[in-house]
Image (cartoon, rainbow, N blue to C red; front, side, top):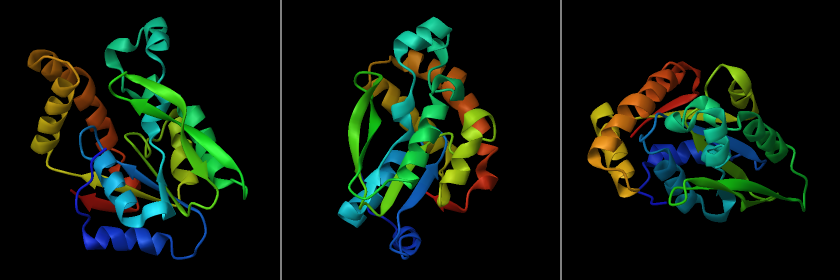
Length: 208
């Protein structure tokens, strides 16, 4: 996960959220390819051990389960995640007791699978940063996510740049240009349109 220099106002927003000294959960939502992971990594680099990243992507259903359900061809859509499991973890993070260690899954793009127990969350970490596409969705188990977060940001960037990033990402992980463009058209962009409809539910819009 790479990071980039963080705009001063974005860092100030995060620091203001942490000002009480109590555990806070910050959500970063955006369409595919907008740079959620990069923004989260930049915050983590700036805040050090005061923060921890817990990505939504760890809750991808396994490829074998997607095959069983007939959803493998649109992996990344809202119903290809364990949304209820994600919400449950957020509640556990909010209620974490001193001295308790929680574990979260992490999605490994090179494997195209989630790895259970890959992220350790310590009770004294003041800011938990969770990032993903569907934090602001209003249907199914996703609808509960917003209420568990202390603040949610929506990251917005130029759509052409986002499209180019998606193309490069898909090709980097093994798809041909033609296959990558097809996946963007059939899966990523319909998801992006659905996500954009929830933008108004964010506390703050961050422009990338």
